[in-house]
Image (cartoon, rainbow, N blue to C red; front, top):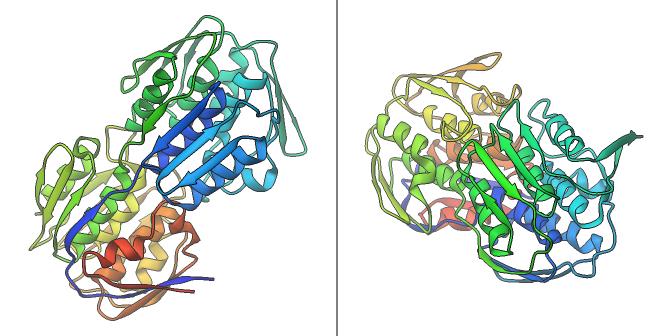
Length: 416
C-alpha cells in the first residue's frame, strides 16, 4: 500500500492552483443521468471518488470519456438501474445517484452507501422525501428497491439541512410532475453549482444558496457544458498547511467567498490574508489559537475543515476548543496527532487543543479523508520525518497532494 513520507520544518511558499470541487463533481455526474444528450464537465478533479462515480456511470451503460480535467458523459443509452454493491460501498456520495435513476427509469436498486466512518449518517431524509414524491421503497437484505409510477412534486421540509438529501430531491424533482419546494434546504455552494448545471440543461430550479429551493418539473433535459467550482475544503487545507509552517503563498483558481468562516478564523489566529475574486494570498509569522471553533451547516464553519484546522491549532500559541455538531465520530484523527506530540483532550463532541511549540515526526495512519489532511498539515509543521499510511482516504478528495505541496517547497513524496 502506498504511503506519504514528509520531512517537516520547511516553510511553504509559492503559488498553487486549486482543483475542482469533490462535493460538486459527484452530484453533477449523477445529474448527467437525467439528460438526453452529452454533458461536458470541465475542471473535474482527478481523485478516486471521481473515478468511482465514472465507474458507476459506465456500469449503468453510459458512454464516458475522460480527457485531462474534462469529462464527457452521454447517458442516452443507459438502460440499467441497479448500482453494484461494491461501487456503492466505495463512497458515501453514491446515494446521490438514487434521485437521478428514479427520474430516468422510475425505478432503482441500490445498497446502503459506504465512505468514511464518521458515525451514523442515515439516509432517512433522502428516503422519506422520495416517498412523499410517490416512490415506494422496499428494503431486502441490505438493498433498497425503489419504484414509482411517476414522480410528483410536493413540499418537502427537511428536519436538518442535509446536503445530500437536498441534492437527491433536486435530481428527483427536475422532471417530476408539478412543483417541488424544499424548505430548510442546505445552502452550500455545491448546491448552487448543481442548480446551475441543471438549469444549463434546461431545468427550472431556483433558490439554491438560500434555505428554500424551488424546482418546477420539465418534460425533457438536454446535454450541456459546465465548469465545476473550486474546492473550498482543499483551499482550506492548503491555507492551513501554509499557516502551520509560517509560510507565504498564493492560491489561484479559488473562490474566497465560499470560505468566509474559515478566513475569519485564520485572521483571528494572526494570519494575513488578501482575498480577491479568484485568488487568496496568505502569510503567517506568528500563530495564535482561535479559542473556539464550532462546526455548523454552511455558511458556518465547515465540518470538513475541522480536522485540517485542528492540525493547524496543534502548533498555535494558546488553547482552542473544538465543538463538532455535525458528526459524532469525527475525532478519530486525534489519537494519530497525539503520536506526533499534539496535546488534545477529547470528550464527546468537544476537543480541547493546547498548542505546542513543535511537533515531532512519527508513523501515523489516515483514519478518514479530512483526518488524513490534518496529519499532512501536522507532518509539514513537525520536526523530523513522518510517514502516513492508508492514504487511499486522502486520495478520495485531494488531487496528487504530494505534487501540489512540493510546488510550495514541501519535502514530500509518495512511496509505493
